[in-house]
Length: 255
Image 1 (tube, rainbow, N blue to C red):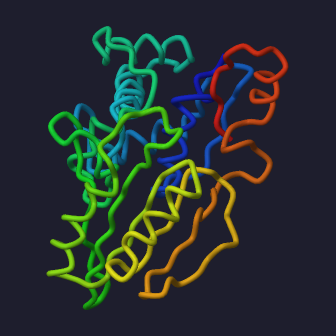
Image 2 (cartoon, rainbow, N blue to C red; image 1 turned 180 degrees about the vertical axis):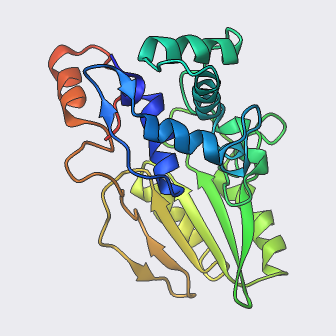
């Protein structure tokens, strides 16, 4: 089976976004067209990950490095050879999923829930961005009700930070990733008048309860999910349906 259905698809997609010509995959022969290989070799120096690559998760970096190793050796690239090259680059550590914690500390616009354990969790729970002359603080929180994790209380965790940020900007946006409407609504009322908006995420379907609370804080229970219209939560519907039919774990395949 061609590697393109998982790691290589991601790599190809990212290369196309960054200006490479459209390429096709010869699935029957399991060979990647030479156009992509030549473009990749021209744009990226061998043995050096450029700025485009360095921001990617470790897994994608290794796939692309494996590709470059094969092109340097002028080998025909098949799925088996690419996987062997990938294992060699990985030195036996076969990464099988995106490890955000491998690069989150260097990603200025990526934050994680503020109420994760600060001593053991990489990244930060808020950031301040500047739009023209306006400063906007963005905070991410995760709820505790029905979320399967016992995190620090989001209410008492966020309050001191809000007070601190208000000294720098009155514009504070909170993304509250939580399961229940009640927890999200309670957070909005708790911070009414202290932050600009509390917007919920996680439950995938946009709600119609948008409003501005008495002291000026905007609230929406859930902003909804953005993803492929013909998929199921971003995954191919066939795999999700099969999981319900068989009640067995299925390989996650994203649209």
